Length: 216
Image (tube, rainbow, N blue to C red):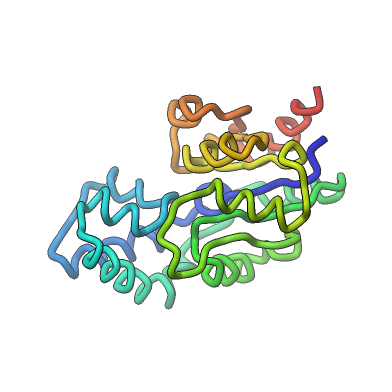
């Protein structure tokens, strides 16, 4: 029986491309680099280090510099250039009333995730937030999901991971939790299906009905 709902942040709870993409552009400009819009949007989801090394083909040294440039903008105002997806507060409240416990499990550094969630008034719905330190360069959602389970002493089958990218679904499958891929974020339906999402949800308000399917 599911007791814990693990939410990805960017692309699942928060529509965040405004601040993320402007900060990425600022960092790339420091290296006289540009990327197509389609490539820029792929920075949303994995760690910045992974994105700068794989998408922009930077060396370790330059990727770390790019992260510092990114945070000059994002850490000041960029993280608030975002909005909560329509229906998220109502969905979280409905599920909380039904007895589920909400946790945000994000690859965004924990200190920034906390600021975003406080600013957008999501914190009252949550039991806790799990995220990496600013020094952690990994996109490993598996590790973060395991940390969330350990926080509650929960069994893997008691949790469902909700996210918009393959990283969320891959992490859930590696741990053995349930998973829901959302179609309103930054990943595609094809990406989520290919990763083996347990269920798909078209909108935030569909999520309670989708969770009910795991009871059958």
